[in-house]
Image 1 (cartoon, rainbow, N blue to C red):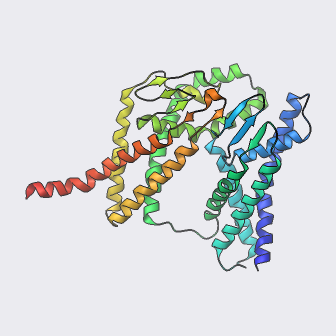
Image 2: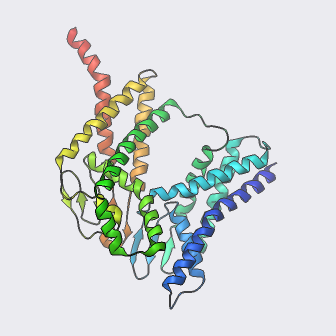
Image 3: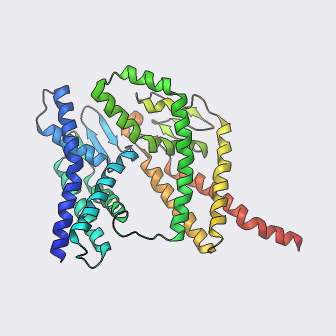
Length: 358
């Protein structure tokens, strides 16, 4: 039985990998043939495809070629590509097994483990003198993504009420950030167009540029959330965009940066009221359960926000762009304090009123 689970799982793992890797190899081959290279060889497009595939898992890279630096500020949206490929692959693995397993969780672990092992091997094989993926982080990133994808396929996993409440809070906060981002994009559409015209990417390049901007939308939404909660975000070393400070250097030619504010504005701090209200709503939702549920949901929300802020921060290759995105500890601390204020208002105010009446 175990051998059958291993065989079926590994077949679907290979399918989940190559269903993404083959189109990426085709795109890399076209780009390589179009650009041309004196020192290049035919293995370069294959390596580039693997690097793109690893980058979709948010795996950082060391660069030691014409550009020396570290690449870790990667698009969060790109993680959806391997996520959905793995979800489909795991669902097919379960259908082929026809229930020939004792525990679906063990199948999930085997599937995610095989995927992480294969990704680590590919990361090691794709290393070159100029580009080196962080192979030792590969099993961690890929296993987590694969396991989370398997949780959404097959039998439904029931989450605790604390996890559900924490997810609700984060979803509302991100929803607000995406709404603001959408409004900023539509109000700055002419700037988007002008940057795209200056870049002159061509037809094929325009498609890739559109995809790149689309994949970076979650990063931008989190940066907006950081801005409205007071901590702001950076776009390069020594830069800061917040309601208190507007300090920018040279910017990369990315159309999505058209949404950047031109000056600082303390009016943005009014959005803190919404975060406080979200903390109050969390306390009200948890009242039907217990104080333990409230504490657990608050802690889980902070852990999730820390993880999201990690994904939305990093380095963008050059020393000048070594700090991009959110400050992990400032972002988590600011939202945590604001949520805590809202929780305290709901929990403590009724007790204070009772004591005053006495």
